[in-house]
Image (cartoon, rainbow, N blue to C red; front, side, top):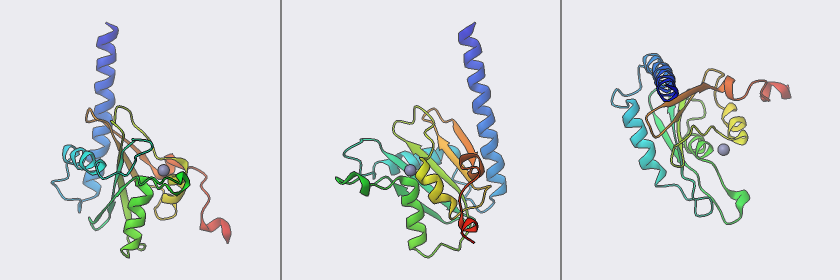
Length: 168
Ligand SMILES: [Zn+2]
């Protein structure tokens, strides 16, 4: 019985997050149709292979999507001087900004971490970094190896954030 209830609850949770993603797809008509959830999971898992993580062995991949459909990839890049390490999320943003996209509207980022046996959310530093470039409704999709997706907004991740408006 408990197993059945657990299974059913898991299905409900998955249905809820999938529904969130489908709504987001509808609100992002420029997102290429081919980028369905399964394709995105596969893209992220392939991208993880590019991670430079000889110390943590924890491969992270990020795909940042702009309103016009352009995409920028990032992976975590570690360094023997640990403080020089950059996370996949910031790596994707740095790539986009480096290519002149600072004024583009970023709508969402897709993330996967490690073996994706859990939903691993962005670290605090990345939350602050991302908030510099996105609006509060920016969507963060975190992928699980079983195909589940957890969806949160920038506002969910970093409420009461510090921003340029605080410097005025
Ligand atoms: Zn981070």
